[in-house]
Image: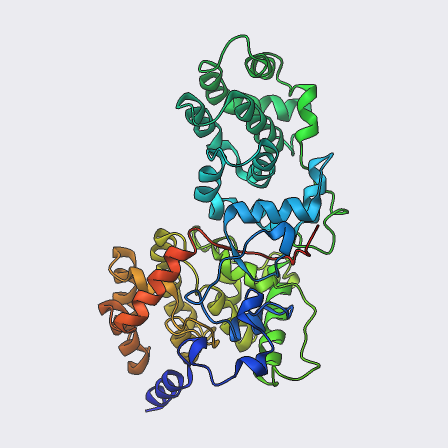
Length: 453
């Protein structure tokens, strides 16, 4: 009976989309004509009152008109915003002043398709493509041969190929502080470098530079200017890899509580925090590493430090509050927005292991429900993995979940609806699919760009 009450309350209390919210546009003091609900530096206020993607109005000429953070922009507009924010660069480290650059730099796989469409587009300058190459250089090794393939197909010119390889190769060797380590790393990638070398003109400077790397086991001196090595000084206070997930999580819980329990129309309603949790939600794979086996952790390891906490750790261990666990689950709701394999693999992993964590007392009945229905009112109310309900991994995980005798029947019924593809209405599923398509070409701007002459 309790589980049915919990289920009923949860289903009736979650609103549909923000367009159906009773909060008026006047109360919000956010207007569509000004690029969305973005004048408050709070991810929670932003999502709570966001109108969704359907009433989206494309922005134009960011350099002239500026653009507020939270606005959805295309990848070329992302690069334009970075360029406006940073100006002319004399060293790649200056790019770290842009939060939008840092977000791409930290989550390159999310922007991969848009990046490759961008560099073959003749409308953009070499300087702009250089910024894109720097932003995508953190995990560059798989890209090297793809760059060469684009050159062979005459989709990019040799100067751009050399520029991108110089940026990506030097940045990939950032951690090689000694000759021995560098030599070892060069030997590891030498087959790739040799294949590239065989496909470019022998009289080109790039051919000469690659030969120097392969023969002398050292990077060309002229390439050192392309190296990105952040000491933390330039990007301090911005979105860097040093910001622990747990710190983001605790701020997110506090902001969500503040937004839900106050009137957004109040004059004092403003949270001057960067929307870090929104970045987590939109790049969840990097914060919920479900691609490894969960080995046991000692009690000492669990208690000594939370600096390297991941979403998995929050759910699988005691010591985290119910609110933190709920917020962690909500943070996974956009898994699969840009890649359906992420939702079928990673979210299936979460459902599978949630059974164990529930039986250990680390997840509550309400947490199980939140795996299937978002616990925070926003313009979507279900996690996006439900679009991929037919995938084998999801079906298998749901079957295991439904077969577990300790899980209340009311929660199992929700899981059965997910399994059958009937939890959301046809209209809601179409809405979510439309959002998935939209987000393949539109990305969140994380920093307000002021108008320039």
